[in-house]
Figure 1: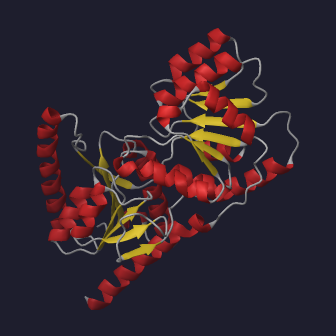
Figure 2: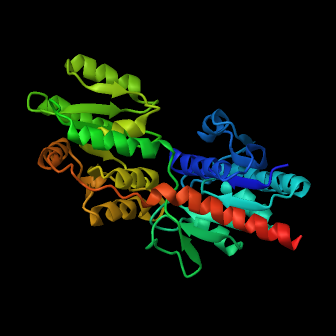
Length: 360
């Protein structure tokens, strides 16, 4: 029976830190059979978690959306059903620890854990505590933060960093080699997060069309699954040599080999850029709850690693000029603090399990 539950997901920013925690627990001697993930059947975790050899229990429904109140009625019913489903499940196998990582599936696990008085933690990836984690804290969960100055963290928290995939360590070596080897042109990576970004895609297309005779850098454009066909077709019609991809399983290596990354400002993306020391042009998602992407981006700016362009001011001209003016500034120092974040969390979890074993 599973002893540790890791719940949440929805985007890569939630799922990959959750996966890193599980992998670190295995490195610390916990059996994979003692770890179970809880996620949504509609989200990325359905593919990622089982592909890495972990058990995944999926819940129906999605999170609530303020602009879709009719759908919210049905989603609210499914949330209640999910909470009851998780509670019954926990009654049977009584996990020792629950870790929430944010996203829709995190709350049913935290609610059930609160009723059964199971030790709970929630990890906040962003620079501001999100609504679901605020609720989790009220339910008795201990807050773990990615940054020392997370907004809304209160007094009861522990600063652990943001858990990153194991490949980030290898990417640091790739980065060092890239910076020291001669290259014909600098490389610019454009991406829009795990879900893609229509705004970033369109602005990049406009920039390429307008400045194609002046662009003296290579572009790798991760267009996203839903927009890849359209974007790649436009580039073909423009007859330009843009490396357009739907996605890249080795994306962190592409980041390591880039002189500038143009991206949204998701927490995991910012942590990876900080860890590798890669300069970035960040366009925060304006609809992000609590404007947390702007705060994520600001943390990189404070380290001299980021330049923020507000979405309402973004244009092909501004993007081109910002890239051109910062291409030579790619010798930033990496910050390896986040590399041990998953290990810090796994050690916290193991300590709680050992204490419960002694008390029992």
